Length: 274
Image (cartoon, rainbow, N blue to C red; front, side, top):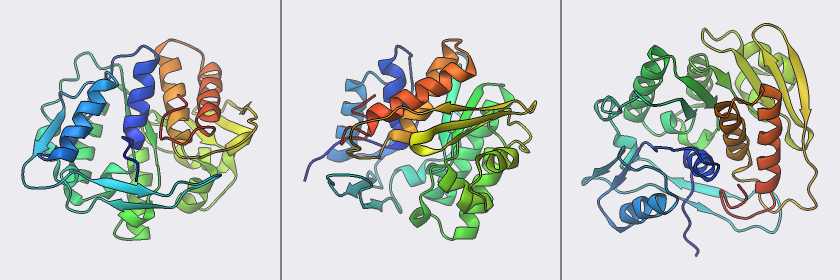
């Protein structure tokens, strides 16, 4: 048994900090040793913890993941009734958005409880009202949702409140019924706020389409061996978001996303390759 700190949104936060951006992470942990470990380790990555609240009544969530020699590991989540599942909209209302330039949101958090979904929606609405650049990665975790229908309906609706949506082709097939990148992009460009959809197509790279109709592909990078695919999509999101914050072109941002994803699949941790 080897304990490491990970998590989709946290991976993005850690990677963004490594590339020179100041980051705050929003969550809730228990008042127990595992919660202490989470906060201590996040601080060691120099990611802000002022919006990580403590819950004395519930424990810190965790996940078990197989160690594999190649490819996708089997995972099992222990999230139900955890501290994070009890993060309330009131806690999210305390977040100061005055200096926030961008936010990365994932479809995992609203899956863990109705309370978490309400908190997620509160933050998403505040970001929209403040016109803050928001990226959304569906990050499908079917076992966390109460039903397949709930997952599909909720994630597709939430995606429409983000400026940039980042689905993978497999996710597109599950969420809207097609594995064609342009069809997926067209579906999510119907969102009221969505301006760009970037569809991840694995080793081939990514397909990009804007709300003005412009579209193109950005090639991926070849790697000698895939050790573990966990964290590659988060690395992609982090690469795109940080490049845009640095005023790079969208095409350059997607190229950075592809590069970080390629680095990550060659390592075993959640974010070791960023």
